[in-house]
Amino acid sequence: MELRELRYFVTVAEELHFSRAAQRLGIAQPPLSRAIQQLERRLGVSLFDRDRRGVTLTGAGEVLLHEARVLLDGAAAAARRTRRAASGSGPRRLTLATKAGANHELLRKLLAVYAAEPDAAEVEVLPCAMGEQARMLRDGRADVAFMQRPFDALTGLDTQDVLTEGQVAILPATHPLAARETLTMADVRGLPDLPLARWPRQDGTYDPGPGPEIKDLSQLAQLIALGQTVAVLCASSRTWLWNAHAAVPLTDSPEVTTVLAWPAHSRSRAVAGLVRAAAGL
Image 1 (cartoon, rainbow, N blue to C red):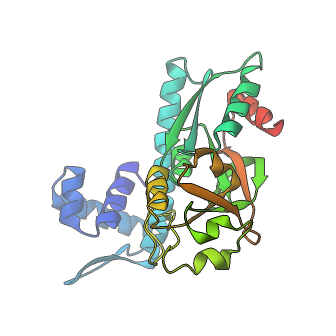
Image 2: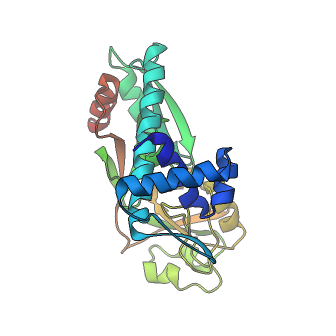
Image 3: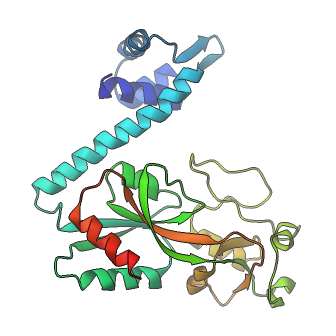
């Protein structure tokens, strides 16, 4: 399979419309259709069901969509890391992805410990959207990332545990439950006037529910302060709370482990040094 064919296939699979996919790719529709048909002949399977109602992925197409995205991300990562190495910045510079609002004190400690090593590389901290770290590691935009177990997808990544902590409910400071010493998950799930915030899944969609769809932490902070939602976050999230917020420990929520993650195939000495520093925290 050629990368060009895989790019064509992924675009059609995402659009589920050959004309829109061709427009997005900047090519005519006939050569796009021929390329997909050629790919299907080479694999010996049908990737799409085509009828008057439109285009849908077959079971085989669903599998190839997942695999093709991994391959395309890998190719992009190889190109980015090769260019960084050629420019002389590869082994002496690391990009660390972390979602905005992550544990700043933990990150500060890690960078301070690593900087004390005699051969430490320069570390660029790259804030990113929720759940974006894994994609950035796989496509080469980041070398390492702060992620959280059990919430983030860690398949294909190596990890070093850094911090394990409990979770808290973040409420409006004026809410009656804000005065409680502890809460349970049942307490925060059963508030008709304060629906639980909904986080994006790995594919960018949201579970159904009455709570607001959260795009970033600044939006979440505003909605909590306005009395429109409640959120469950790790205890270290207290560092970004406003006076309009209250954090109450949860007694029955799962613990969250912050990990330093990197691609399993990485052979970077700079990454290895940063991992050693994380293990010593």
